[in-house]
Length: 190
Image (cartoon, rainbow, N blue to C red; front, side, top):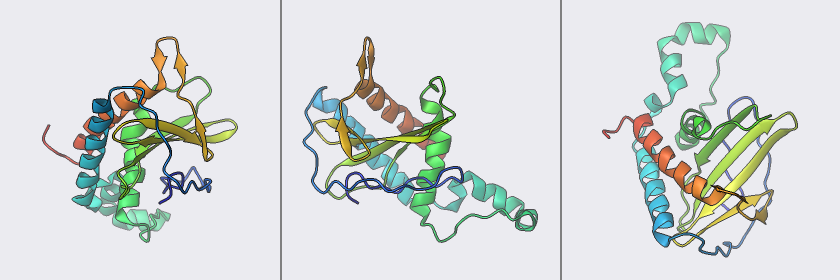
């Protein structure tokens, strides 16, 4: 995938939108210790490995569908079985793990946060999406061994530094919490 085109989770409330394609890996300045980025990448690698070992039983709606198969078919519950398992796992993670990680800001109706499918170039793509009265807004975070960058609509944006609030630090903390949530999601011993 290009760096700003991604497999968006596909829960029914949101329709996919195309993002502008960025063909070249962005230059990312180091603003925090490289160790923090390397740890974030190690966490992402573990999550990707857990996904590779997962099956349909890790998707909560699959358990409901299986338990209530006859009733579910009768009421028209539908899950697109043509969507690859990895994409369905990402969608489920974004709602069950990523949504509750950050407090909802005033005016925000819903939010999700997720790790996208892995890249062969050593870059991890994380996404945050929130929905307000005007619709969805997305931020794309790129993590490398030495730094992080933020994009929206294919354009680079600086991280928000508001007093003691540091968006980049919050992102790295969120990745750590997401990793812990993914460990529970995939039923791994703590």
